[in-house]
Figure (cartoon, one colour):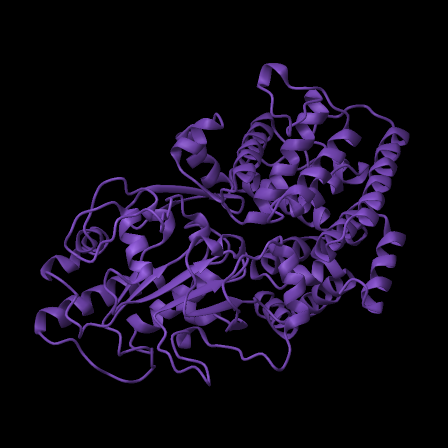
Length: 556
């Protein structure tokens, strides 16, 4: 895609349709609400967009690391030799590449800015600022395509989302330059059966959406079209190799500071927050993710203003626990239900709501789902009315969105919030019913389990996971076992009445088990995550050992 070469489609009808689609996309994509579904303070994208660090990302092969570990690796890899790529230039061949690029895969962890990059490219095209040699851009998020059970031809499917196209019989004339944007491959629930799907070359032939997608991606259908696919790294192996792979790395260190200074108008407070974030290696690394910067800014702005400096979060678990409490306080103030005597007291309805969401979070995390539909909610005992009510009450935790065609899609605000709530569910099941959430048996036969045994099971499950999907969940689960963190969430968790001594004994046992696993484990990434777990448990002397190992190069 070249930024300034103007070339309009032939025929007045085509031009009119193009203008109508541009107007529709501009209206849809010009606003962004940071972190929040459709409830938040809407800002114009052009006012707050910061160019993200995007690089050429290798072969598009499978990367079996938890995505937060990849943030850590990315922070080391931002070197001067790497060529950064502007999102509007992703179809441009890099120096030394002769072959034209048809399909680009952009990888990046959840919350790193993939969807915002997509939004920026579409908006720049719709406003006439870039890629004016492209006649049509069709954003087709996987979360919408999942719901399409009927048979469609490619033209019918496009007309379903873009009714303006009904004026045109086909876009297959060799002259019309079309870009398809498939955002969120990791959210795809279609089989994408490249091996067995029938071949389809006709844009007017009805077939399943899965067959349309595999043939578009393979180039059998509309071979002249350009395709841009975004995905979490762990899901990128669902498609055959592509012409170009890019990777969104999020914020580099100067951009992290720039974010806090833009976000917080009081510059003294912004400086204090930046200083605090630098004191914790875990927190500073996580700030590569724009969404984590936003969560930290939300928490620290409130806590530093209210002079609660003794309690300022130093670990991930503390940060997310405070974030959860702040959201409930905000909700209760908004609906005039605040208990001024103790804002950390939860009403019974608050507690029920969060525990139901926590169960949903755990069950869907186990299945690898970041987005849910009505059938998923019903499986977890949530009805649609409740879910919509929760998303209206807790706009910063759980959200419901209408797809392009008004179907409801539910999700947690960010994968890390889902992982935190999943840990709350696992802990509460153990504290309240001594229940092991990892037990494969039916509800009637659930085995009873002590907390230290649950920790061992969770460590084993996390280490067994091929793509490390339980790594952050494990950090949160272990962090929540500390008495100080349980006190913070006392309105939510069952109080067992266990003594400080019992709690300390549980932590000691878990620290011993982690140390044993660290010695046994050979993967540096897994070892680093186990050290992060020790950090959540407050075992700082062992974490200092990791720093030494990292500096000496034995763990890099």
